[in-house]
Length: 523
Length: 58
Ligand code: B12
Image (cartoon, rainbow over all chains, first blue to last red):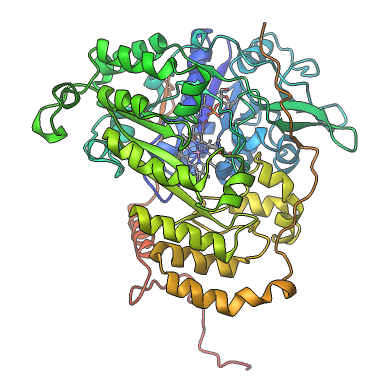
């Protein structure tokens, strides 16, 4: 049986660690259940620097060192891979997750130490790979869902692996391999709602995979039916992301059993659903999934006491489990929200993004300025706190669209410092603006990827009209909701439209397929 | 044995965090200070201070 070291890279270093890496925790559980020897070094939780990473890599004779995370962990991953090349030379270095799946060919060429990459969903591919390693068979030419190098050192992307059909067959995450007491529970509190603020033992759960919407900034990790492998213009296989989806959700029973177990074992008081969007899942299930989940949450005795008694949260001792997730301005319904509130939902994130008609239409979000505006009140009326997210710097952003957003923010009483429209690898924006992005980084895309962090920071702009300088100013103007400053700025810049050289122009890309082609689903 | 590694068995090798406390304190201060930049709150990086007294253009 293989000896595996998982390393969870540091993410969002400016904040404390808050999220157990769900994907790694699931893969560790699968490997454990298959009888492998597993260790996890949660570098994000410990934040101890590279000297400790070095020691960890040298701490045993690992057959496999496995690392992966979202694109913004690239910096850290690159350094760990370099160190693995020195301190764990004989181990097979396997990478996976968002940073790799979004651009496997580039990552394999930028990080030569990676031996094998698992592309997209890893629930079957990763244990398959481990089985082959146990047999001493390192021929990856026929393994679905991987990127590897052939004898000549050429990078080869194999055909995609079908997504699994029944999510309930995967075990619960291996929470025991992560420092829950030492780190994660201590960082349970968040400022999104009173209940979330007083949370002492919060944990994340992912209940579903996929979202039917096709927002241009978003990406589905190649794990939700959104990815196929096709030849690029040079004839080499590459990933292509599509509008196809294999929407799947865990049964409410699977989720409830898991929460009950977490309550019994760790006495959790709060669950944060990582799901891309609870409301798109509700619609997909013909409004049955959330209903059943809420009913069973209450039946299982997980409903917080204040919600059962209908009193403010600080009037009673709450023994249940509060929870939160993501919603959608056009897809939520008052009756669903009411039910969610009853069951213990405290807040829902709404990606409202903009209040401009044209921007919303082009974005593919399926919302309108009116719906965005009413959504806040509709959600509030249920008792759940809406957490609206705003973006500026859309390709079509104009003074008019910024004005529309400020006016709505004023009307709704929202204070927000908007995110900058950022083309994270994997998203349609990224592939449509790849050349313009590279041009903003001396033609070097790796520099861009190294620079990516929170979208509160400006990196490459994809706005046609506004440059980084304009957007930095506009962000502050939106944060201050100051229409006077906006008017002055428009007077100054607004006339120069004809002479402006666009910072970004869209292109055609083989990495995007604008139809419903999808990853096959396991029979 | 150490807490840093968690898994299905116990790794014999001890992993020690030798990061000097001083560096941690310095890093933490820098992080906090940088987060509060604005108005009269500024932060000067000591390491970057390399001027050796030479006058410009000499
Ligand atoms: C939790 C989360 C976070 C957490 C971090 C979680 C973590 N420890 O990795 C926090 C809150 C910090 C975070 C931050 C951000 N996030 Co985020 N986040 C998520 C979220 C909601 C859930 C991730 C998850 O657990 N999914 C479920 C698990 C099962 O999937 P998974 O981890 O990908 O694992 C599977 C595979 O990828 C693979 N895999 C994963 N790791 C590994 C490792 C190995 C070795 C192998 C073999 C396989 C493998 O196997 C798993 C099973 O199939 C997703 C959206 C979503 N619902 O998925 C976005 C998502 C990952 N985030 C995203 C983004 C854009 C961000 C931000 C940049 C947002 C922002 N604008 O600021 C910031 C980053 C900030 C920063 N400074 O770095 C994007 C990813 C874009 C990208 N190109 O990578 C996503 C997909 C959202 C989206 N739809 O656009 N995020």
